[in-house]
Length: 169
Image (cartoon, rainbow, N blue to C red; front, side):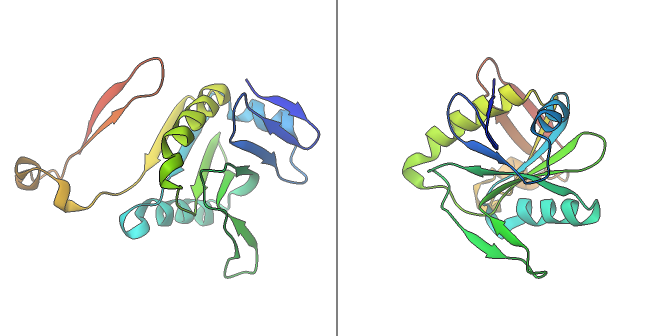
């Protein structure tokens, strides 16, 4: 469970979540509980990132937090409107929907630790639904999957405490 201290919220292990100026920490933590989180990663063609950017722009989502973790390459840059963006940011929309936008790659030797820390943050945040936007190269699909008209994707979620297997068409 996260602890509030000063202007930031720290979970039992990093990533550290810095709440944006003007955002009420307690209200944000409460809003995350039971909400829906859409997460992205760096993947083929940046499909997840572009999809998240479309959600953020279409629904005029508010940037409510920034994350710091030594496994994420630190990147800072300005978008087309001159707004400063960082490697890992949390946006809030209406109806309890959040987007965690990842704009920088993970350090390969630190990926496993990042996944463990992010899993702990997800559990502490108590989102009801987590949707992961990513993409895979078609070269890793099996012959059976290539022949399937439904273009299926199989995903295995191994979050501590259990797992689920879902077929998406």
